[in-house]
Image (cartoon, rainbow, N blue to C red; front, side):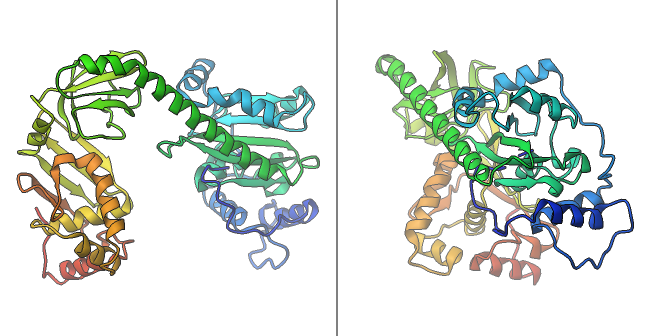
Length: 445
């Protein structure tokens, strides 16, 4: 039962129907009798109606449901160790479970909806066992119907599900509110924070309390991450003073604690198999690097003879922009001793598409006109190019902005030219779609 950690308010602010009205509506819409497709009585909130319709199409029986899938104890323990949320559990318990007989259960899940922690009064936990709400259970919408955790996972925002808003009749005695918790540095979903309790006891303020607790958890995570980087930076100071040539010290996730002799980067992209699997790694923008463990982090030394030597790694590089999959533009770079990929934001996909088509380069004003139809928005353009340089490094030139001439550039577009970055409203992208459709232009191949 659960909610998501952008902490945006629900789009629809209409209060839920009363429990009696919800039950009446539920019986008419989802009951075992004939369904009234022209039902004109009180209706649930749109997000609840959407969920009911989707689950009915999937064939989930609202009266029988299906067996809740669970992971084993060993898997639960492993996922707890991998999760960052164990560090904020003491705060969540003291904040949300104010007494041993508080009328709610506190649940924390992983990003796949498995319940990793479940705390609260014993009598509530016994009642929750009856509907499969227990440690290890996978509480997604497709598995157990409309519920807070499942909807928060799907919609990525806070949500409350009250009584007969639940798709499964067996859950109507409960109300659940939930909020996503995200890694404050990357935005990656860490899990769902959920409070569930008897429908007749849960108070309206629980929604605000749960969303606030999720934000507080993210704040504590951010503080712990900064403190960890500070400790690593202190440890690295003396070491870097003795290292000849460029070097960086990063934490286990690739975040930079300290660097000498190289342009500052906020984070190094980890190899797919993780750090330290080989003594020499090929890293984006740096090329071949010696990687050594260092007290909770890694010492990374580019193997070029100087920081300037890093720029030479762009020679012979191949850049491929993959725009075939709707909603998931990807950048692929290969060269030197290896290759890497990166999922692009919509804006970065637009920028790289324009630079791939205009190999001689574009000024900040030209890019601003192509992206926004406003040549004055150069500050925004420069900020986006600065972010792109974290991944491309020497592969991205400026004055004008362009992909380095020494790299081979290709663009994989969709079969239908009008589907190229179909959601983009950038003037230059719209013009390019039209030209491709008319056969007046071609993508780099």
